[in-house]
Image 1: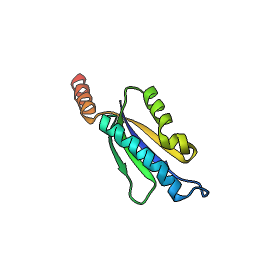
Image 2: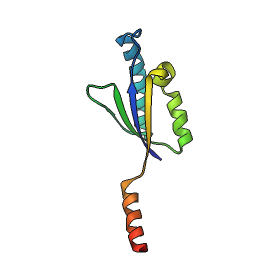
Image 3: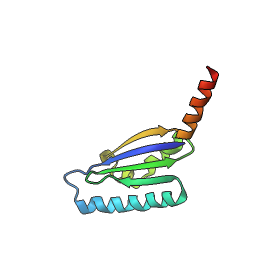
Image 4: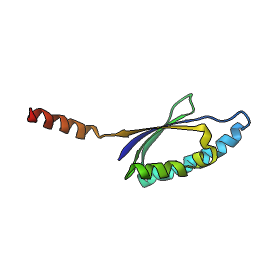
Length: 105
């Protein structure tokens, strides 16, 4: 199943930028490894905001939930990570479904 993940990562006033960067580097290493393995289709950092967008391919909602709970950024900084999850449908499948529906009329 494909999912669009939208991460907003903030950090508390008592955390230095350096401390946030250390966690972010660990997260980036894990994310790039998952991309190389094919779980993450692609990743983007939104310019000028603490926002990361990912498209991932996992077997089930349960697998996604486990993956999210195990992310380094969530384990170490979870209360400051907001994740919006949107299930995706391939457009080709949607288009084929529409063609089938018109033929049923």
